[in-house]
Length: 431
Image 1 (cartoon, one colour):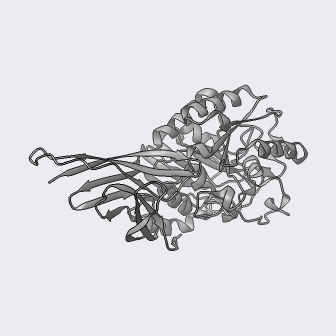
Image 2 (image 1 turned 90 degrees about the vertical axis):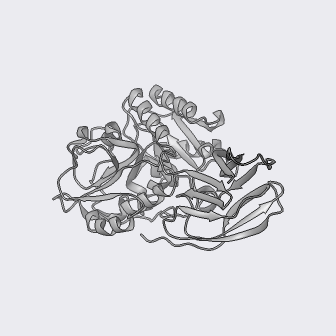
Image 3 (image 1 turned 60 degrees about the horizontal axis):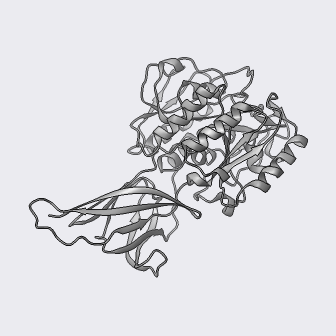
């Protein structure tokens, strides 16, 4: 029996991330050598933000911001043209809309069109008027993203549960995230954890913590449904206590409280996401409650908090089901987190935007055919096509129907040429 092994490489293009797989053949020792056939390339649909589609924005008046930005650029292997510069007072927690607007206009002018998202490398300012810095950069300052009166709802994000990976073309926006840290050591640790997370398929647990704080624990009613949805996808555990302690496999941690004790007893997996639903978690300087920054210092790779009083509207905070669904399907941290918040105007996203622990593709070939292992294909009807060159013409080879949370797929034996798998029918998700 001849055995075929395949090594998958992530290659970037101006049009986005393509997962190209280079097939190499190796014959079993007991089988006489056969002529080696030519290499075969397989292209999958774009399902996530490509690294070179992220711009890194630094504040030239903040030496720590510049140092973090330059390190992130090197660590992620991003081109120099992805480094963008602004200059503003780094000592203030908030910018006025009048000061912010020309800064954003300058940023937009200098942003290459291919850029789909921003990494902002500062801790302060974290707010623009009544909006968070990340939402103001993404949408532009507009009071419609803020509560018109105490506890009012706000404008809904078009990026909420968005199924695509090209927001600037589809939605005319670029999500943004703060790579926030108090010092360079903390920032480097955060960035290095994000790199370690990539394609690691981590074994860990999503902890859904239900505290006695019912005002801030409004997400807990949905925990049983989330646990059921994630069965076989991400291990989930509902914890009915004030805080989680002495666990070393934390992949997700969702709770509702003003402060989270016991963080020093936990071990977070690289790429972990954690947040606590409370009023002032996004206030990164002198917050009266626990800052979202404490999650990153404890070992998480991403967190979220609001910068003004949001009240306990579910739509103003991450939906654990959506975070876990998108992240577990190979999306980057910035994409998964942003897609989980319906009303993000007052909410601040922090962490490593490119962390992607579930972005993994593996292909194996035997004389029985081709097996594809990945979590990255959304439910729907797909068509496999083949061409003699990368530009075509492509001719259909077979059709494939992919179900919800399906990770293993059988494809025909691949002959010489170039292959692509494309979605040909709508899919739905169950959140």
